[in-house]
Image 1 (cartoon, rainbow over the protein chains, first blue to last red):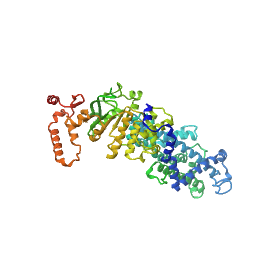
Image 2: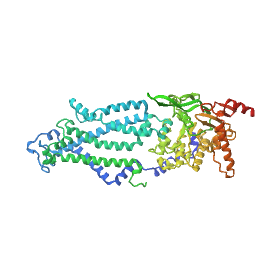
Image 3: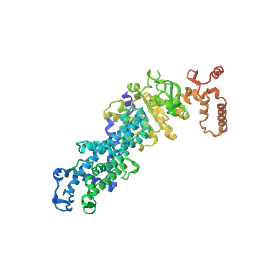
Image 4: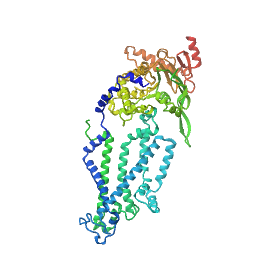
Length: 317
Length: 319
């Protein structure tokens, strides 16, 4: 039967190389090329990307050179040291601990947790939403009741209770605990779009051509809702930066004695710190604002990459 | 031996309502349809919107579940999904969709769109697969430059030809063409139809050609079935249907074809009105009490019509 099509076409194996070269010349640009063009066209986003990458790399590398237990020791002599002095680039807090070093180690933990949390909860939320929306019927009904159940749990309170009753935990277990509670928003959003996509003809066509359900979900439908996924993931990454920070601010985040952006910002609880010792809380607050802003800028560019009508980059081949 | 034999196929949709979301009624989209398709022929299925012709096509390809009745392929009933999967049914039965844009995945390049059935049913090496895709593009008159483009970069006619290429990729025996040219303008319609005919000559596939356009059906089909309200009202060869229509619904459809000859405008109008009057007055001769068509009765070896028993007797006496 293979011969049947072979016979009827003038194209044979010998032409393959020439023809594929011809095809490549006319090829529509790949996603990566378009993304690069979009970044070049949007200067603020390019700067934001550079800031994020440089900051991540700096924080990760620098934290290897910091001895955390030693850093967290109380040093009475450095009580509220002014910034820009020797050994204390950003000053010291009430226990005489270097703010700059705490910031570096704290950022690494906060970003790590936010990244892990985003990856785990978004992946799970996307899978849950797509499977639920695609199959519909009874599967959808059951999965949405599980979703409803998770939604009515008072999230913050439950996390605080779990964190309080677990005797030993660290950044990794905290990430896992948080992930259990942060997938619902994503899953609902993805489900609604999957419901709409599933009705389209190309899904019917794939079914008619014998493609399996899982393949249809992840290879056919997922690329079509990728712009939604990217926007949602970047937004939730920016949001998740605040989750760990917020918990630490309340005192239920990482174990005591671990530096964190949240504990640094919690310094602002003290009116005296706000008025006199601005360096104890301001750098951490600024850092979170700048990072969240940058992430959302980058997210916008990624969204434009995936949505042809919003592109700003040069369109020629 | 016929490729596909449809026997008493029914597809009913439940209407839910009331207090417990009970089934209060059913929509009889397809209500007892039987026909068979021979190898290499084009079988036309004609009817107005909502007459169940698309549902019939979709249940043959497996996108709708039949409520009852059977679809026999090589003597095996393929109304069950597990049976279809086991015998790789969709390798032999493929489909062309009406809307060429929405039936091609907008995020995929033409190469992977056409290769999709190949990847599912034939394990080819990447080179062989690419070669096959190029050959298929060549068959429908598209060059190799189409290979790495996206569907939105093509015109409607080109897209529908890509749809045809995808449908013939695994060399199927039957292609369900669900109003393949209804969304295209007239010149492009002819182009796509001619490519479909060329594919049929080259590869010997059969088509189930679903359409509401009698002009197109006349161009394409050797045998035609007319469908109305979920049932077949008339089935016959092209000559039977166009020159000796017996059922009033067929006559109405034929009378509704616009005539371009303005000299006979009044005549055509009179003819149309006459058929309309006949339809209004002689409902009981053609439809039973519930408005459904009667069972098909053969009036000649190739020609069957759904007429009331007494009309058949009169018809036979008249011949």
